[in-house]
Image 1 (tube, rainbow, N blue to C red):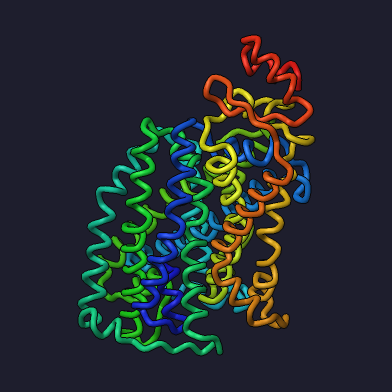
Image 2: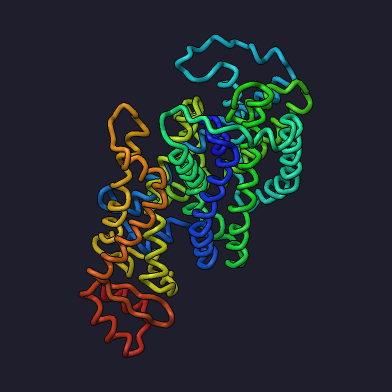
Length: 484
């Protein structure tokens, strides 16, 4: 909801903001469905899928793109866990102000303005964090009731918010006739493409997180169909709601409020304010567990399997999410935009390489499941890394780094062409990395051998021994383990 309303806050027409969101959702739908399908087809999470393309081991960021993918995704999951908890804290504040209106002024000036948070907000953030914490100890399969309740009641809540926005704003016409008013000095096209990037950024983690959830699915096709429906339709509808609420705030309250919970705080109806805060808090808890804490737990467990499990990983994610002061990111629309759009430039190349590796290089042949869990096996490549994937990832990310640097510090001078190229960074990185990986595999091929329908990948020095042994009828797994 916040991405399109942030675009409205930056001066983009609500209609153009929605078109940009729809384009961004359509672009990311394909990779999300494919990665989710791989997870449900093989019942494996993303860290295991990544082994086929990146190799089994990566000790340093610059040496193994698989570890890089885990670090990048893990860092973002921690940050977004904190950001979501900050939003949940806003929802708790709506509930407390509905019960005790005087809470709005409780120790209001106790913290300095540089903290980017007030004492009431900090207390509400802590309360939401504490309420979420016990659910981290519940297995995912036992939380199905939570998501069933969410699916049942949230659509009615969203319809109610739609109704309020259209009624308070006197219909759709006045809202979407708000003109473009870009004050940052950039063109409408630049902000439009930045909105696409931010939309992709908000959903880009699904392309690497989805397998962690769909690995439990019984039918790979059903999980892919569900995502194909949810991303371009359901999420776009939620973004439309965020756009309507931001534009309605401009009509009713005289300014664009990009955080929907800020709008709820302005309501005079205390009953509506309480239930709106309660339902936002409920939905945020469910989203935070599946979208952030569980993916982070899988990644950190994959790096330190001897010491950590999923539950411990979730606890670490929650603690770090509190410690990183997420309300600083929430402080301004521009800062939130930079945050959401920036991290996705690292995820696009990661996904592009995995898709190219599976569908083009391996021609969608089945993974050798045993060797996805074996050291010195078929996916060991060179010292545990696939240099082709690492190089392609670097090539995909490098052209986008100047734009990211400028977003972090706008005082650094950058060429306008570089910044305009950055506005579609996720897609640019995905295409460049996939193409580079394909060309590297053509220039430096690793031999492949299909045995019993599985795609066996070996290094050149092992190819002849595997061919000879397979011709004698020996099992491919035994041959590969022995020779490599």
